[in-house]
View 1 (cartoon, one colour):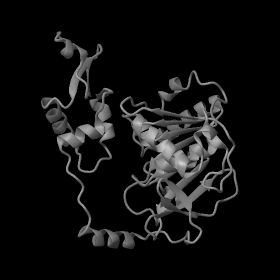
View 2 (cartoon, rainbow, N blue to C red):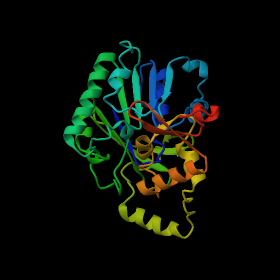
View 3 (cartoon, one colour):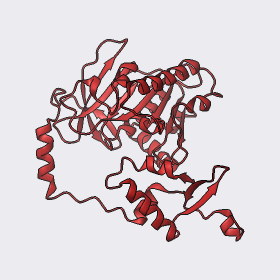
View 4 (cartoon, rainbow, N blue to C red):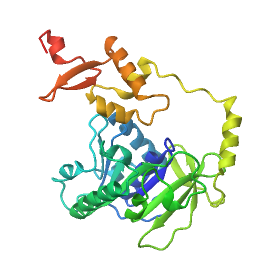
Length: 320
């Protein structure tokens, strides 16, 4: 299953809501039945403390006690230790068959191999074939959280929504998309399904920290490109500008005690507004010179990695 939505549109919250529904055996969004079972979220965007905050918030919003989830919900935060899709084969090697009902990959674009093009149909077919192989071996469902391409999505067919080659919509058994409704704070959930009756589109309204179905809104009223442009023009005079990327903001956003390589840093900053590759390099050098972050060269390949913790060799005063 693909869940496709624009960046920063709360799709990770929707995926967490799905995970909790399966872990408890309750209907997702109060409408779609689930079979209770273990759920694994592999999250390569959030820090562990962020996930630890989000889970109880959603549980409380849904009126679910932590005991009802028990030990059926697992979150593996991989920010700073990124893996691509093909390396997940080794990750799932020790996983027993039927250990999980659902595995959620969030965000899918960060599982893309660095030398592959998401716009290439052959590449995307190979990636989905790999996921199919893992799913067949461990006998569970996979859910991929992915983002839309830039621009308005209202004029596109459901199968064309999603950044990258069209193979991704054809390869999945369910291709679900969220597109902005003309009502602020609402989206239209639409889906193509392979083996089930067609689904009518429904409207979801964002009511932090969850999406809820809103029967009062017309699911055919997608926000038009013209309305989007008008809304953007009207908001220019009152919109608070994005804060500039200074060293402190850069460090607090992308660095932690967990070491990160330059390649991983470039991947993480790819979606950040106002951060070019050159700006990333300059801010990294400034942060290092001000001892906000520390570089350590490791391994036979002499690979440089950065963290907010001073290397042991420097703390001990020994040579690197």
